[in-house]
Image (cartoon, rainbow, N blue to C red; front, side, top):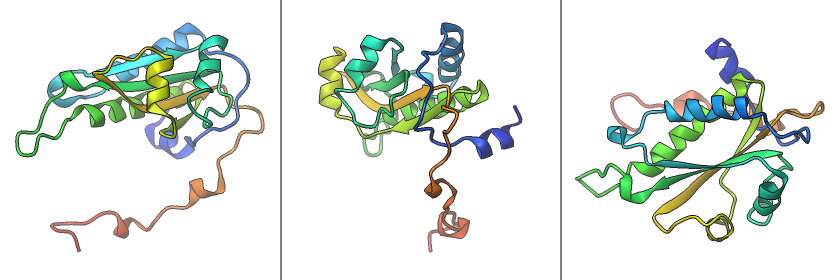
Amino acid sequence: MDFEKLITERYSVRSFKPKHLPQEVVDKILEAGHKAPTGCNYQPQRILVLNTDESITKLKECTKCHFNAPTAMLVCHNKEESWVRKYDGALSSPVDAVIVTAFMMLAAQNEGIGTCWVMHFNPNAMRETFNIPDNVEPISLLVMGYPADDAKPLNMHFMTRPIDETVFYEEFK
């Protein structure tokens, strides 16, 4: 798909057909995440694939923003495998995990799979429910599946701020 078309047509899908994704589609989405850039190529991302009725039932105990998606991927980062900025100790791994999420979201769109990027979840419940180790931090949840026939973007999807309010040249004004 043409990239401009891909990013223009993508929206947060909140209504899905009740069909789990086939493994070959899951693999394509994961491969896109695997190709995402990370700080010093440390690849601190850890991705939990939830693609069974049982795992989705468990997910629903951790967030109300599951939108009854049949498949989800919880993107985490390993804090112990992060590049660290020497000036202030900032970790690149949370940003790396979000970049991985964005790559997977776009790859899913390219495969005709709808997604919704979710941060509204209880990380402690995720940690306990899915046995996530202490050094691995859940960052983003990508719920996904085939869009329902009546799926459409929310009205707010089309509302953007003027670009001159978000982009600055030379210095912030």
